[in-house]
Image (cartoon, rainbow, N blue to C red; front, side):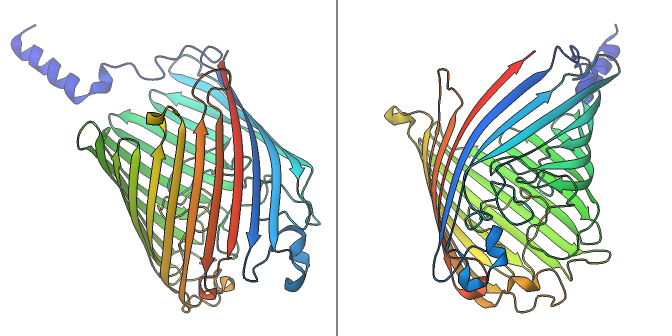
Length: 447
């Protein structure tokens, strides 16, 4: 080969790295050969004491007058989650299936205590079910480094995300495309017709919307780009449409920098822009919400300071329980009220230097103020929340978390949390003390 030909070949290889690297589909070993399975055992206990006249409005309490409602909530449950992920058949287009089956069992609760933690499903009379479950599957096709999934599945994006923060995971039904054809760039797109809440056993309840009580839209569409040029930097851009309700766009970035071998600094930026669209089923929406968190780490110590701001006369709202990538969205409050600003201070301590690897203690304090919901659309989906003017509140979260590092129980996660929330009446959330204990034991394998 001539020198010119050699240089041309090198340039082509550098410009098109995928041309010389095997794609994921080319490396497929087969439907069975690449299959994996997992079983997760999870036990969660959640107790909430309401203060200063607040009460439990869930489960059977919804049928009672306010004065007769319980001043506490309590649920204890066991969850079993089985997942099967097949490999792909060989060839130009690989075919596979992902399937799941979930089951929840009541260990302790009652009609007067259930409803707030959302660990348990409720029957038509508001009593917690002794057991509940659901299952589903998605067909998946892969060409090169692009995968198309159709069916019931779990999705994670900043605008539509399946939460797994209770007993059982949330799922969504629709089509989702993930493409990794270009180095450092991931492209995604999706169309969904429903989402299934974490404690639901049916698939016909439409979308899970967190704050609006307006009529629900029938479809959710999204598209996004995630650019990761290095391990220290990632940026993402998403756009989405919740039919006849809102258009929501997202911009996010995460940056980390090692100051030396023992110290590092990181920044986490999230910004959402939401406006009503179509029939505006939740009313007028013109909302910009953003957050910025900076973290300084030195050895086992991490110190974080965050700021979050809501610009708009409605709260920041989202579809699915997990689609809130805001740093001040913590355990009992999202700090997302109309026009709210909030600050966060957080400290994390990893106990590895003291001979206890896997054990981490965390403490966070968030304070929000300047809430003004007096201009919310009176005919929209947020008027019922009762926001006033001059709202303020705070939350303190403490957690001890341990992950077993070796032995037969390796990977077992134990978490104990104590959370406290207090505020005035203009901020529309309850004063509560929460204790949550969770134990999770995962099993995984291959065929």
